[in-house]
Length: 228
Image (tube, rainbow, N blue to C red; front, side, top):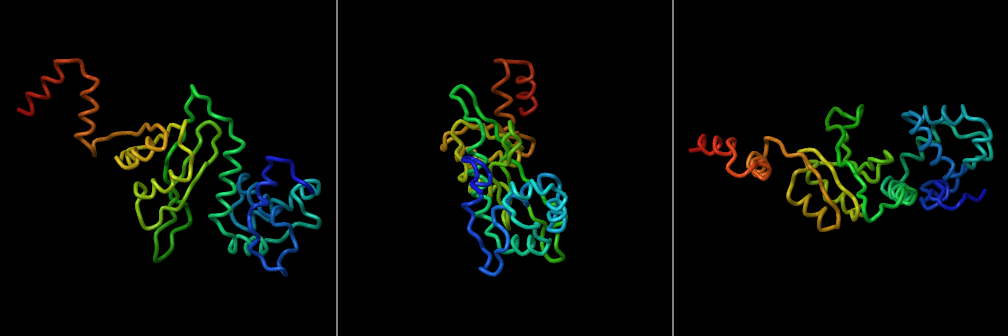
């Protein structure tokens, strides 16, 4: 079956097959498309992925690229364990970027920068998995993401920003990302930023507040008197 240009099935053909010759009974593209589709429908884990595809009509099996009954949970588990996750995410990132509408010169595309801890990933002798993501606010698509690892979210942000074309985009974030290096990386790459400033940066917050005060305002004089 030939996938139409620009389709997810065509994009997934770029993912290298990590399976040995004896383990290629099923199309890699079909299995990856099944994993993506089932997760979008709420599946969590190989068993749920297998149950999802088995519940679909045979017409859907053929459309995805299966020529026999879809694989069992073990096959999905083995594939996920062997898969190059970074390469897989890069292919998905490029595909999502290709199908999103182009940003016009007079319009900024808002992208949220946020970190989340994955439920159920805490281990007895380690921390839970934390992911840092760039989310397109218009479509709801995750444009790029990466694990935080042993650093904090602020330190992991700059490598993540380098994975995305920032020109024409407005990066939004909470107080965690109010960092000089992060903001400079965004502007140097042609992007814009809107981040929250809170009381953990009192001097910066006061400088910003002062910019919006009228000259010689009572509130400014009161603040000056209190300092004096």
